[in-house]
Amino acid sequence: MYIYNKEKGGRLAIIVFVMTALVTLAYGCKTNNTTNDSEMLVKQTPVGPDFNADSAYNFCKTQCDFGPRTMNSKAHEDCREWIIGKFKQYGCTVTEQQADITAWDGKTLKCTNIIASYKPEKTTRVLLCAHWDSRPWADNDPDSANWKTPVMAANDGASGVAVLLEIARIVNKADSLDMGVDFICFDAEDYGVPQWSDVTDMGDSWALGAQYWSKNPHRKDYEAAYGILLDMVGGQGAQFYQEGMSLTFAPMIVKKIHAAAKVVGYGSYFPDKVGGSITDDHIPINQNRNIPTADIIAYYPDCEQSSFGPTWHTINDTMEHIDRNTLKAVGQTVVQVLFSN
Image 1 (cartoon, rainbow, N blue to C red):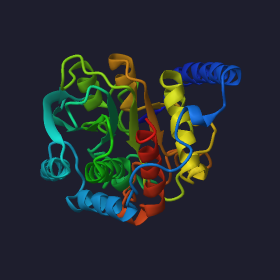
Image 2: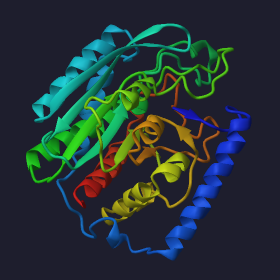
Image 3: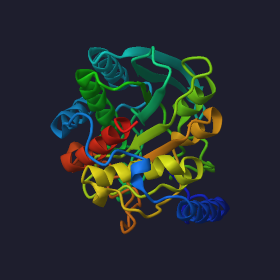
Image 4: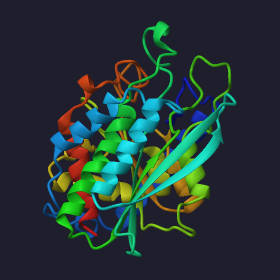
């Protein structure tokens, strides 16, 4: 993912900041003029199956056991087969969307978007997504000697997929959700221009798999009621502010998520504050498919190293820094959203 800030984005940072501020102001005015009653958004008692954080943690660890899932690597392909197998085990119909995509450096990336459909016959559908590839370069590591070392991506990659897999498992077991869910694991999200490169990064070198899918959906004229993107949802000390671009495209989905978190007892993880504006997989989904999609993404406002947290794009993004409590907070919140429909 790519964040517009003073260090990256230059003039674009000002544009996005102003746009976000205006949208946030309008959103706040709209909220004041309508209703603050969260009963309009989610059920006011916990609903749906229990999200098992230990299970999600193990799904995260298994991905890391393959090694960094960098594009075109054996670990990438081995992990792909495992992810597909797990979704099939949990009753999903799986589609592999393969494409050769040219990256910013001219390299051809063998990209596979994994689409796992629960109850594919249902016309009412919700989209849950994450990215499953690993960053090839630890370009935000404090030690410049590590800048070209692949990232294990326990949090920035594996955690989101782990939550999707656990939700697929428990939803299939409960068999009481009266709508379809499409779990999409996007590829080639994290191959964006590294900080050590001389190439100017305008943000379009990221989220390549999502860009491709948004223009070439796995099913013609694919539609979903809404979408939720999970990115970096297992880190220690993580909180999930209202992401700026999500407020632009999907303000009611943001509100629904934060209302659900309060109902299931995880409101402290989802403060009602606006965070950064992120170019992530949700942007092409919103722009090209017009599916209102919100990004649940960690935000560390007081972290000097990065607002994405101290392990972001470093060699320290490993299982030692994954917190079951964070996985639980996010997973149970998404379950509440799903079963409140």
